[in-house]
Length: 115
Image (tube, rainbow, N blue to C red; front, side, top):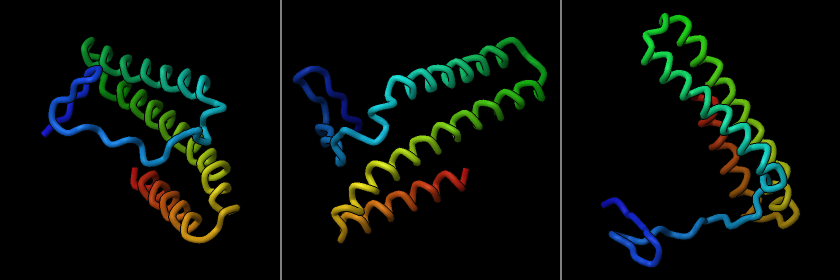
């Protein structure tokens, strides 16, 4: 069942709160990240336009590659901030929290490598 939450009314089940409340490692760079994501969004919209205008396949694939690289670069930037902020904070605490953050970062890296 899909959950839709509007104002104080909820249809279906309510969304659970975020498991990791902020501030996050990227918070200090939020404006720059949003600007970068808007640029990537523009690239993807450009891809849609290219398909709509029947642009040559190889030219579209070149732009797909550029968009993919831009997303990968963004992901690496977020990963670095996660390591510097979240994992570093967990390292100060030590114990199970550090193990959990390292496992979480390792899983994220694994997902990035599969793409």
